[in-house]
Amino acid sequence: MNTQHKVAMLRPIEPVSIDPACLALLRDTNSANQADNNVAEALEDVALGLSRIAGAYRQDRFDDIKTEGIAIGEIAGRIGLERMARVAFTVATLAKGSDGVALSANLARLVRLGNDALSEIWDLQDQIV
View 1 (cartoon, rainbow, N blue to C red):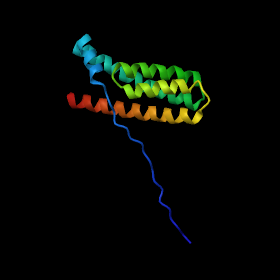
View 2: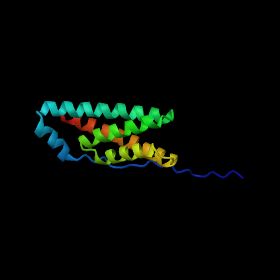
View 3: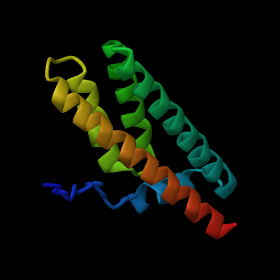
């Protein structure tokens, strides 16, 4: 008897939410060019941080996960990515504990949110230019 079972592939999707007030504040306190440079630099820092935190997780470097989580959270909060900031701070907190399942789930969510946010912001910049 040859029975085939259908396997569902789940891909969690969360909409990217950027707080426009944070971006407006960056523009108000800086020139437009300086604000754009600050956002571009922050996005690069987030991308590098996501790469470093994933590497730290693969190598069981929990102190580095905590440090990177805090850094990503601060940067994300500064540019209006509040949900991503909250998840990054959660990852940093979980890196100090013993709940490996929660840490891996939140780290996967952080990487997913980060990648989606970076893609969306870069797409927006492409439309403006």
